[in-house]
Image (cartoon, rainbow, N blue to C red; front, side, top):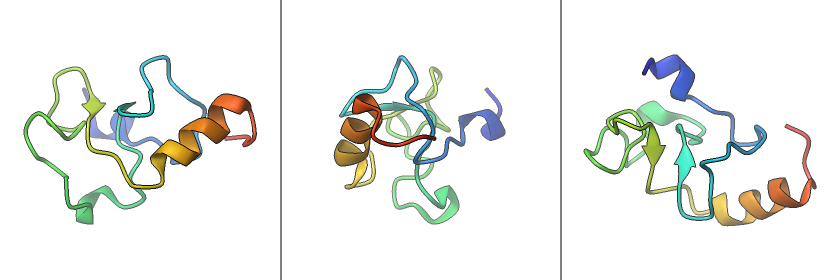
Length: 73
């Protein structure tokens, strides 16, 4: 999967694979300096399925806002 396709805006509409504990792609504001970038099995860029398993602290709140339709990506 290309890195460009895995960069997802923090406020982009939810993907069917997004949950409170994981996202499809990387939603970090600056993936290059994100502490979990390139960690095998955690980072979307190293995951075969493109899933990020260690999200920014604000993700749970953002997920709920997006799920409720409170934000327009």
